[in-house]
Length: 263
Image (cartoon, rainbow, N blue to C red):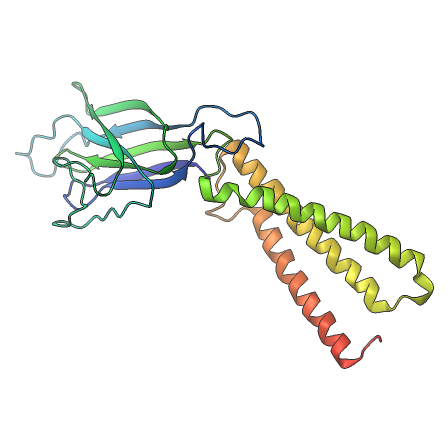
């Protein structure tokens, strides 16, 4: 999924930042067969609030300051929250050109308040891995509540998950055609059909329902941006359970044929 709500305490420490990356398509590189394409984007909206006071009375809490970096690269970036590493990101340095093909940086200030309300949008003009890095640049921890939205030209599925949707649609169609032909042939020759062949119909129907559920699940996630977990979606649990039952039934049917049962 590509809508991520985040609710966490963001510490001030040179080794900690919130990082989220995902593969995305630009509009010109997006698959064209799906239709209804729109400009891709990344939005980050939410609030950052610093504590009203600090345990150390002599510490000036001040206004919250966060630094948000949007960067992109052809390959997955190797970002590490480890001080002294070459690709470590802090409030004072910037991404390395060896890790990214490009980047942009925004700094958001409190402007006289201990709370920031922000709504930022980044354009996606390059196909590849896009990463957002949020770093707390205050001298104390802040409450970070935001929603990250990654929208591709075709919908909310990320680049690698999108290919699973048409694959399941094709398998669903194949299972449906196989079921129609097999049931027709079975009924036509029902006088000579073995009981095992009726059981095979059940396995084919389970395969059809499994792939249909997978296809509809990915279609819904592409439309709404819903998450696959956590907790795991009910439709995914149903599909996985049905897949296990189908494979177990297929193995038992094969074993029955090998042992000569029903033949």
